[in-house]
Amino acid sequence: MTTFPLDAQSSLQSGVFEDNARALLNILEDFTEEKSRLEDTQRAILNMLEDFSGDKAYFEETQRAILNILDDFTGEKHRLEESQRAMLNILEDFDVERTKADIANRDLRDAFDSLRRAKEAADAANSELEAFSYSVSHDLRAPLQSIDGFSLALLEDYENLLDDRGNDYLRRVRNATQRMAQLIDDLLKLSRLTRGELNLATVDLSATARALAAELRKSQPERQVSFHITDGLTATGDPNLLKVVLDNLLANAWKFTGKKEVAIIEFSAVEVNGQAAYFVRDNGAGFDMTFADKLFATFQRLHLDREFQGTGIGLSLVQRVIRRHGGEVWAEGRVGEGASFYFTLDSPPTRTEP
Amino acid sequence: MNRKTILLIDDNPDFVELARRAFGKADVPASLVVAEDGAEALDYLFATGTWADRGPEGNPVLVLLDLKLPRIGGLEVLRQLRADPRTRILPVVILTTSVEEQDVIRAYELGCNSYIRKPIDFIQFAEVVKTLGLYWLVLNQPPLTGGNQ
Image (cartoon, rainbow over the protein chains, first blue to last red):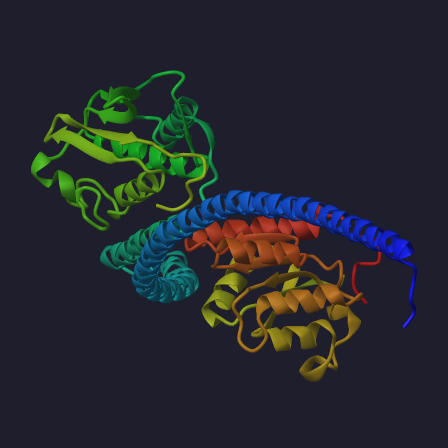
């Protein structure tokens, strides 16, 4: 053990105190520092806690918003489901509709098929008709030519070997031949008129009627016939076919006024239901209105052949032509007081078939 | 003087007889040769088959052609006639009962010179024959070569 002087001892003792106090002060100082650090930390924590509560509110809000969105989604989902259901219904309806359309389509196809078959049949019938009229034209005329030719040869070369009656018989044979030839020609004309296209143009009916009247005058110059033809009557139609109409009507008027001292034949037009109705009127034999509907039937005649000759085809021709032009034809008359034949024409430019 | 020849192609013996009569009455300065169908007509025109022996003096100056013929039809005869240099410009008159539009058009397309419908009335027919003879044998001026062979 080291021994120190007392003084030294006491001074040593006082130094130890001082050291301790300094240490304590240091510790205290450290504590203070520590304390302020802790306070800082605490403040920081409090701040953090504060921040956290702010965040929490924010989170809560976010959560609420998300819930709202989810709510909205649910609403949306319902709506979508409804839409989907509606769509499904529509699809189902479509399905039903499609089935209906399919059926309708099939029906249409069937109808189309049967139309096509009908058209083929009509075409076949038409070409048969053509072959028929060809053979009528060729094969029926040839024998007639022989009958007429050899009857005439007999009349010319053997006239004096036959008595009057024999000659008369041969003349009757020739007359019948001519009539039959006329009949064949008229029939051919009739069948030809149902074929072919209409060639539409503006037709001067007045001029056509005048030309036909001149021809009729030339055919029997001895007759006294006065024609009254209204000027400037025009129509849209097939010039050749309308000529056939006027030819038949005027020739009929000419024929059926044959027993009149003074025959009057008129061609003019009146307005019927806002439409021009052309007419050919005569003061000839006329007809009984009871039979008016029979006038236009093929081969139908209202007069005896020995009174007025004819094949019964002319007016049927007229009717066909007028109908092909979309018009109407009708007649008025009284026995012994003449007849009027009216016709209308209505043919839009594209029309080709009745 | 050699008589000119007219070739009549028709299968109807009645018509042939009436045609002979009409030509006789009309004093047409020609003799009539008759072929009863298209094949025989072509034989005559080209001097083949049964007509192989005929001389060139028999060359017709005019052909009267019916359309409806057995074996080879009139339009086919016309076509072959026009296709051969020997008969290309030989006058051909269609003399037939048909006036079906398509026949008339077809015949002209194939190069016929005239198309006449046989009239049923013999008096009219005699007129037609007279006019034909006068026109084609007297009035008409054929090319110098005569038009065939």
